[in-house]
Length: 303
Ligand code: SIN
Image 1 (spheres, helix red, strand yellow):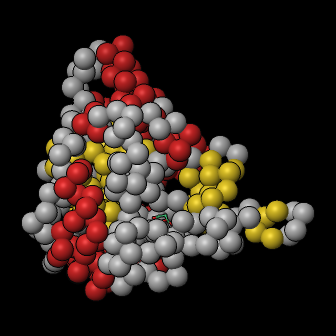
Image 2 (cartoon, helix red, strand yellow):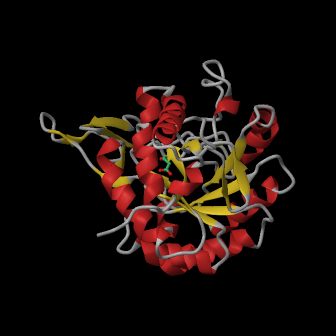
């Protein structure tokens, strides 16, 4: 049995597989299926200062090898999370990442302050949600805005701070360098790629909000490319996500430079996907006589 444990910005994960924000809620549905302690960690649904209902339906559409979503950050708000979800999660024996998604810099600062002193192990600052009018990806598409929000949240928390990046930018490495310069301890990428589908019978977009975020196996090669580029551009750790659906995908993402991985869309097709991925990674490492998963991080040898 290989050593699957990893550290990201000083935070320990018993294995590198983390359900991605938005794909796992707060773990309630999944804890009935398997012990959450099996997972490396959990990134909880993106939380805003106040509760939100999200966007009107339809807000999910199937695509070849993927899905489009325009959920719009439906969540119960940070106070509800701290009072009602965190106490349950904190007993589960896994690492807890709080995904923070305010509409303004002030929102994000307030949320970070509220999380100080709680059982949350790490903050993932979401500057990349493409489905909201205010905030979200607007913070993540310019170096100045990404740097400013990172600086403000850095000043509001002593918790390790990871910033979740958008792929819908000209240069993701520039954004990564901007958040690193303002105190981010890690970056996670990629959030969804902006996409659109049209019902050709009524000539209406399938999603009520017209456009949404594409995830699933279709985006995997884009994610591997961006993780590789970012890992070579910054000194802080990178957590890779985007279309990971198997242990081999996770190994590939780590070879590109990811210190850990998040699994999103695959969970909608198979709620046990993270468990299968952990098992497959372990088997692959054993077959290749690699003692620690840490040995494969960034091990790709470019031509
Ligand atoms: C959503 O709730 O719209 C998805 C979250 C995200 O893309 O960050």
